[in-house]
Amino acid sequence: MNKKNYLPLVWFVLGFGIFVFTRMSKLVPTIPIAILIAPVFVLRFSRTQPVRRGNLLTLLGFYLSINIGLWWLYETNTLFNAVKILLLTLLYSLPFMIDRPLHEKFTKNGISSGLTTLTFPVISTAIHFISSLEGFFEGTIQIGKFVFGPIILQQLLSLFGISGFIFLASWFASTINYVWENGFDWGKSRKTALTFAAVVLAIFVFGAVKTSSSNPERDTVKVAGILLLTENGELTSMDEMWAGRLISPFEETVSTIDHLTRTAASNGAKVVSFQEFAMMIDEGSEEKLKEELQKIAKENDVYLSITYGTYAKEGKGENIHVLIDNNGEVQLDYTKRYVTGLAELNIGEAGYFRKGPEIIQWADTPYGRIAISICRDLEMTNYIRQAGKANVDIMLSSAYEFEQGLVIHSTYMRTIEYGFSLLRPAQHGITVAVDYNGNVLSQMDFADPGDGIMYAELPMQGVKTLYTQIGDVLGWICVVGLVGLIPLSIILRIKLKKETT
Image 1 (cartoon, rainbow, N blue to C red):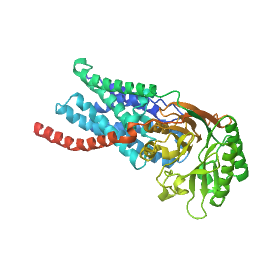
Image 2: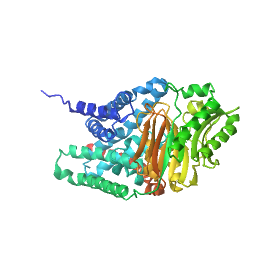
Image 3: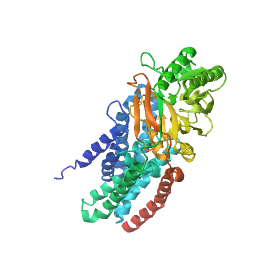
Image 4: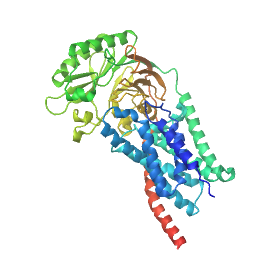
């Protein structure tokens, strides 16, 4: 009598159960290292199942775990989120679905060496990298979840960007499975395991050297990230505000901005930055608003960064971020480039605001070279590379998180990638100040903001990084590798057919 093997069920539950903790959820905490552990068991499950059944169950597993992990998103836009979850399911399943038949062909053809552990990371890195370039998941909000571990490990971002982490996590999963498939025989698995360990050790050494070589006595500037708080702590939905063309009470809001700026300046802040959509105005009031802001900056002797939205008389308005110096002169006047939603269908922010030119603006100041951006702009690594190439020292990037942010947004990773420090005042999220090594210097949670002002000392000089120069070389190498696996798969299939006939 054959006993049923329940181990695959255990691996299924472990893999997809742990994956739930990689999401940003109100049901369970976010545990970054879960993205390293979950694929080990998902890959083990997938490879022990027949191809068709394994792929179908992998799809089901990701669909269930993503639904649980993103349950809180059902508060609004149910149809949008249903589509999003289906696409996310496919995105995370594809690497395993492609690996499954390829791994079987390798095994049946007697190809079982340490080199085969590189196929899954190549596939995974290529697919996630491509998804970040265009389409529904353009940007780093999804692939940023692959970044885990201590700051010295995260310095890998300065070499290869997030693709380095996707490759590392996937290589870890395939290496563990290689050892597993060899019955944990150290003689057979030693070279492969030691190669992976040596690479990880080298990354840690690099990170330790990079972070320790930074000069702790570098000059700093005191900055303030400020939120405009409501009396009851509740915010009006942005969609409702835009659809109703609701405007901010002009005199009252300007007075509040003046008071908060004065408070920050009296506490030593030299750079003051407000959240995205600090004000909503008709375009006819824009010059008047700028005059008031210039007066506030000059009177308080600060560099003032503030973001406001305008409604146009005809067509779409703009989401604008201005930087005004302590003499009251407008140094930068920037329009958000990557608005959210679908412009073609007038959905979301894109339905009300037009895109700005694809240019990152910067200005030289007594506190270093300062650049500005807005919210989602910072998710676009190729776009923000302009700041790295321009040797920007400080990035001011205002934000408004449409669903309340529960963890520090992945945009902090740009600091390690491109070597600048960041101040990100985030309404409905977590306001942070981060240095060029990714160290969070200060943070303020929207759920408990105090007076709405967060202070930090930011370095006035950034650092240079390899990733700034070479860009997404690793991502593109993996794309080429994925394309190369297609003819290899065909060759192995033909070989198998000849051997069985």
